Length: 139
Image (cartoon, rainbow, N blue to C red):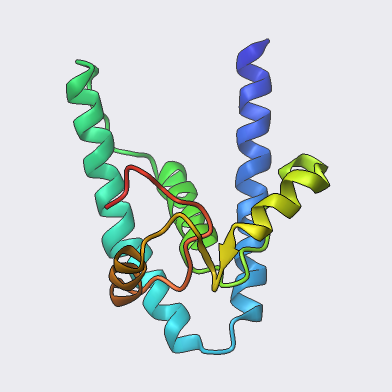
C-alpha cells in the first residue's frame, strides 16, 4: 500500500515538474540564457548527480544501476525547476500558504538567501539562472 502511495506522489511530482518547465519556457524572454541553463542541466548537473548516486551506492555497498530514461528526465526537469526558474514558480507546499510565503521571503534575485555570493557566481558562470532550492550535495 505504501509503495502505491509513493508512486502516486512521484508521478504527480513528475507531471507537475513538466508543467512548470513548460511555464518556464514561455516566461523567460532571453532564450539564449535559457538554452545555456538547459545545457548546464544536461552537461553539468545531471553528470554530477550520476556521480553522486554512484558514490552513494558504493558507500552503502549497493549495486549501482545506470538511471533509466524516465529517471534522467525527472532529474533534468528537477534541475530546470531549481536552476532555470528565475521567479521560483511552482513551489506550492501542497497548498500551505504560510510555508509558501516563508519560501518566497527566502528568495532574493532568484536564489535562496543561504547561497553565498561565490556559489551564486559559480552557478551563474556555469549557466544557472536561479537557485530556488539550496542543493547541499551539489557542488
